[in-house]
Image (cartoon, rainbow, N blue to C red):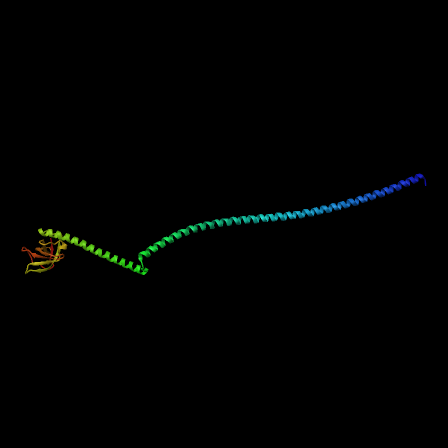
Length: 252
């Protein structure tokens, strides 16, 4: 083989070796790149997994926080309601305390009044008190009735005194109250007198004269000689024009 041929062969061998070496290097690089890529993908997958886990944990934390916030709001509302109830109960307690003080004052007043009544009543029982009150009321009613009767009697007496004084004054001159009207209830022609059914209460007075008539007929006159509250005795005067009978009318 010529030297040139050897040189070409050497160069070819060197090129082959260089190719082999370069190819190995490329293969090694590719294997290294593949390993790096795999590691990168694994790292990326791990990172994604970690991100998902972190997101899940964040979502769980957010949900838990939201639930905690809801529970806190409910707890605060309940606390507010309890505070309101507490204020109401405290006000009720204050009112009850004031009412208790008033009730105690009223109780003391009532007890003092009861003690005073017991002191006044002594040892009397309630039945005795009721009986005494009933008797006192009965006595009062009786006294009032008696007072009314006596008052009426007193007024009647005053009226009778006035009537008698008036009758006495009129008897001095024979004058009688106008409007006297009555009947003859008895006639005694022997002693010449009649009895009349009118007296002092009707205005008849001693010495007073009355006209006697029957129907429209004039019979005569009579003169009162004796008079009582409700009847009178009269003398038949001489100028009588008819016979006077029981039932004849008299007037002045």
